[in-house]
Image 1 (cartoon, rainbow, N blue to C red):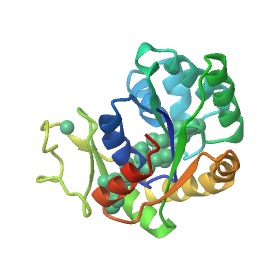
Image 2 (cartoon, rainbow, N blue to C red; image 1 turned 30 degrees about the vertical axis):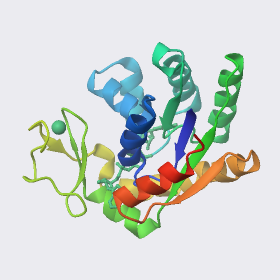
Image 3 (cartoon, rainbow, N blue to C red; image 1 turned 180 degrees about the vertical axis):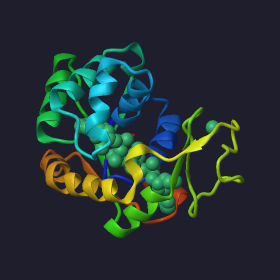
Image 4 (cartoon, rainbow, N blue to C red; image 1 turned 135 degrees about the horizontal axis):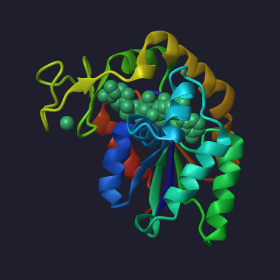
Length: 214
Ligand code: AP5
Ligand code: MG
Ligand code: ZN
């Protein structure tokens, strides 16, 4: 299955992507994670991307499209993929459609996780992520046993650079202005399924399992 996960910052895309990817046996491709890894590795692309990310702005289309096209060529994407956080603009959606068509592929489904703004701010400002294994926690909704140590691998739990309240508000604004229109774009193509993301993590996943057209 070739899937896209859509939804505002903090909706739970990463949290659900881990479950969906395991359930369907397809790679989880998060552009945000790819940029953060490139930033940590201090590559030229990473340094450029982090300037936009730290302000809560979108990384320019030409950078993102190149990175995703390259990733989709890798062997593990042959039998499907789950894109998390891409596309985020109409130009990215069109580029994706073209790249897939070149390989005689197309998207099967787009899952849109919906959550209201104040809940998103609570989720993002309380998020902690393991520096070593990437596990996602929330200080209130899914707390680790010790506040700064990962339950699974004992790695350090850190707050993302872009999870301060001011940057979060900007990311939500950017989502409304540039990404929200993709909901209509995919609805018109009859690819969209909407999921109520305000429920508990496992309930959201059960809904997704039921909606997946497998
Ligand atoms: P990215 O990393 O994709 O961030 P985002 O879209 O802003 O989304 P998040 O990762 O913040 O949230 P999420 O939906 O994954 O939620 P999570 O599961 O972690 O992108 C970061 C930046 O990179 C962008 O701002 C941009 O600069 C750049 N970028 C990336 N892709 C790009 C693109 N295509 N084009 C241009 N630029 C791009 O959950 C959040 C919190 O809530 C966690 O603490 C979790 O534990 C908790 N939680 C999750 N589900 C629930 C639930 N059901 N109930 C209660 N708590 C929950
Ligand atoms: Mg994420
Ligand atoms: Zn860990």
